[in-house]
Length: 431
Image (cartoon, rainbow, N blue to C red):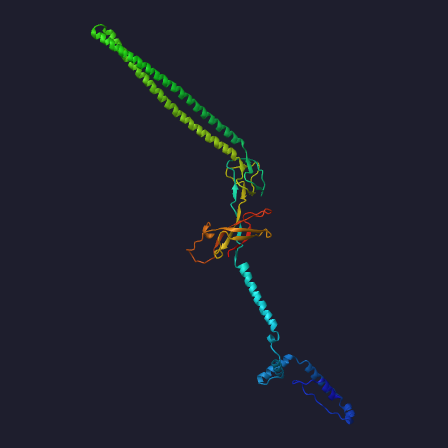
C-alpha cells in the first residue's frame, strides 16, 4: 500500500529525494502494523513533505538549474527541446509575410502623407503671434477756449465725417466777429473819404491850371502894353510915367503866372498825400478783413467736428466743462486700420508686398479675415525705438531681430468692434 501511494503521489525530479520503498510481508503485516505504527506514520509524513516540495518547484528554479548546467557545459533537456522545436518551426516573417508587406506599405504611405502635409500646409507659410491691430489714432482738441455747451456723442460711438463732437460757447466769438466787421466798415469809410478828397483835389488842380492860363494871358497883354509905352516914350509921344506903369504891370503879371504855377504844383502834391493816406486806409481795411476772417474761423472752431469716419473713445469732455485750446477731450480712432506683424528677420526672406495673408483675431476666432502684405519696414523695430540698441559697447549676444510688416485687410467684420492693440495671428503664404 505504501508503494502504491509513493508511485501515485511522488513525481520524479532531480531535486526530489528518492522515496524509500519497503516490501511488506503479508504474514508479518499484522505484527508489524501493530508494532511499527510510529515508523509508518513518520514515513508517510516525509513522503507528503517531499510531494509538497515538488509541487512548489517553480520555473525560476529550472532556469537557475539550466544556467548552472550551461556553466558546467552540460545542456539542459529544455534547451535541447527548444533547439529541436526552433529547427522545425519557421520564423515570424516567413509565417506572416503579407502582414509585413502591408506594414511596410502603411509606413511608406504615412511618410509620404507627412511630407505632403509639410509641403502643403507648413513649408509655404510664415506665421507669428507678435502682431496686433494698428491705426493712427489721435486726440480730439478744440482750437479755441470756452465752456462746453453740448456733447452730442457718447463713448465708443461710430461717427461719419463731419459729425459734431463738441460745441463750445459761441457768444464771445460772435461779439468778436461783429467787432471785426465794424472795423472793416470803418476802414472802407476812410477809403471812400480819401477818394472824395482826391477827386476834390483834382478839381483844385484844374482850377489852379486855369488861373495859370489866365495869368499867362494877362502877362502877354502886359508885355505888349509895356513895349508900346516904351516905344512911345522913346519917340517922345508918351510920358515916362506911363512907360514905368506898364513895366510894373508886366512884372505883376509875371508874378501872377508864377503863383498860379506854384498853386498847380501844390495841388498835385496834395493828390500824392491823399493817395498815400488812402493806401494806409486800404491796409487798415485788409487788416480788418483778416481780423474778420479770424473771428469767423474762431466762431467756426467752437463747433468741433470730425474730419473722417471713425470711433470716439476715451470721452472725457462734458457739458459745463471749461476747455482750453489744445486740451484733449477724447480720442478718435479712424476706420482706416491695419495689422502690424513683427516677424523674425529669418521669416521675411521670401516675403514680398502683395502676398496673400490669412488673419485670425484672438478675440473673435470664428471670423476668418483675408488681406495682403502692403510693405516691409526697411529696418528692425529696435532701430527706430526711443533708445536703440548700441551693440558696439559691452558684451554682444546675437538676438534674432523683429521686423514690422504692414498688412492691409480686405474687409473688416462689421458685426464686432475691432481697434488698435488687439492681438492677431497672421499667416503669410510666401512660397
